[in-house]
Image (cartoon, rainbow, N blue to C red; front, side):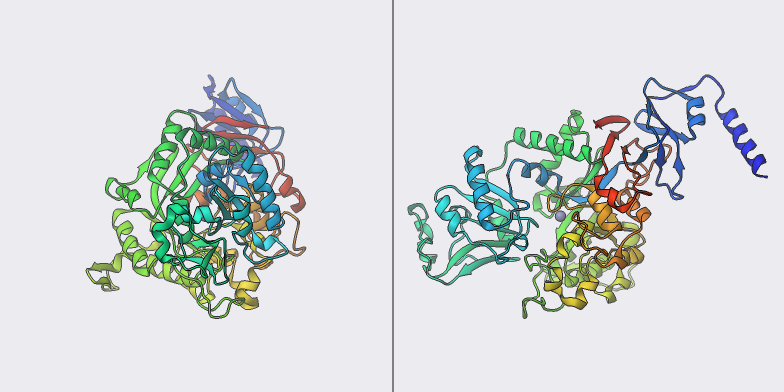
Length: 581
Ligand SMILES: [Zn+2]
């Protein structure tokens, strides 16, 4: 029977491949091609034409049926669909490449010495840095602006924490942002100190706010969430030329890591337009799924509708329900374990999220909301499940009849970004909301997250397997530049639950590890599905874009210790090689 079947296959191949051979632009053979199709089929060879895959089969079959001037012998190496980072900040990362890099600093003194060196070559008036994390220091309290003020009395300095949800500003930066002794901000915190502070005197040019100034009540320089934006807004924009070169450098780094699509989690209209132009000029080859930020200028898209090319897809909005766990801005159902009486906060009123959920629902846009705390998750799950039932009235929101028929959230593919702490009782209300999660957050935060959450609640955090079981799929990303851009760190953290130091030996809450197949799907086809792009990418199948990577290590079978050393040998987008090792 087996022989007969084999004979039948040979016959069908013979019939399918009568001469002359079909022309292709590229043939890859002698490979382990993990197609990541629904059966997880592995092929030996594939043929590509006009940027798309036209056939996958055995070496013999592909070589007999197709001819090409470009033939790659993969030497038995593993080929995967190009990686999709389902949640990152591509532009922020790009711009960060031009800022003072504070990632990995060991103390605040370390930060200061880096800044002094950087300031000597920094061409802009503002000194902007990013990536400090007081949890990595011996002294884990937030730093203050005093030493910054003495080093840089006239030059504004703005240093964003690793999670982007907190920042340290010096006196000059605070003054330029109009932050004084009595400034208040909704959805954010300006930290004040009551000790007598002789440095907090107003310069001549800010005498306009002298009446608001209390000498014994001065900002420490620490800003949380919406307060961070107050300073960001007054930093002069980079020129288009600077942004362009930053983006091209960022894409180069991403190609080296095997990324072929990035989901930009919160971006402005003018940046979408710049990226789109760079793509059309053939300079930016990276495919981008752009989530628009929650900003009135971006809402013009609601009138014009989604925008899509082969490389740019704009059909979603990114909201922030709350802040981050590290800076205690995540909105929790119960008190922080290390700060009794404090539960964090929402960044906007629930009505704001309801209003836009309704609008996005009516206009066919996807809603993607950053939720870290279990309270934020509970609220947004509820809103996601009911947008069609929300009706707006002048004096606020009225929830119309719950029987109103609406498209289920599963079909709308709405996403919760991070889904970091989810009360177990709320898992049943997921109803197919896509968890867009970042496995390296688990292995970065594991050192201190239990202090914030306590020993019981930590079990409900970073619970990726439970989220997968509830939702049926997960989209994986890194949130770079909050984390490193490497997808191999994502793979390792998801499947092995250890950080790059190999800690902890048994894996962090190993019951929430994903299998290697689930992890690869999360980095490819499920991420594509979360972007409504599963029919064009995310797996290597006939008719899909030829976005693929060749690796020197087979992620599906290698020893777990080899995962982090994996190197990309080649990255291809649309059949074009964009990176070669
Ligand atoms: Zn993010």
